[in-house]
Image (cartoon, rainbow, N blue to C red; front, side, top):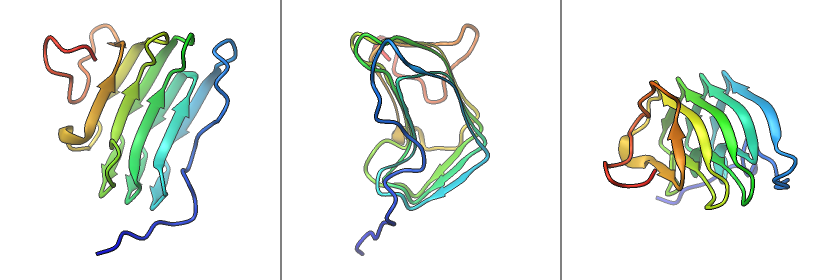
Length: 141
């Protein structure tokens, strides 16, 4: 069966990646996103991010947070979201650039298959928090 996608690339996102000017205070809450051509919800170069209570269905990818080179990020919360029936991209991912670690990360209470959740690079969980679908022991997040 051929997979037909809607016209929108993704529901949220930004193309600005200046590490000296990160976005801050991003809130993406209580939305339903269906059938995007790329990730349903994404942030790049954003600190103090809360992605909560969303439903992402039938998109190519689900929820994606990324840092950029030279732009460390902090305070990323991805909580209480549901991701279903997406395509080949990660359904939930936090990707730290080699020169842009992400700290104080809380990924909890999401409904998504662990086989579709990935942490890339230097991702440090919030103190006292266990990430949903944590990386294997001995493997860098």
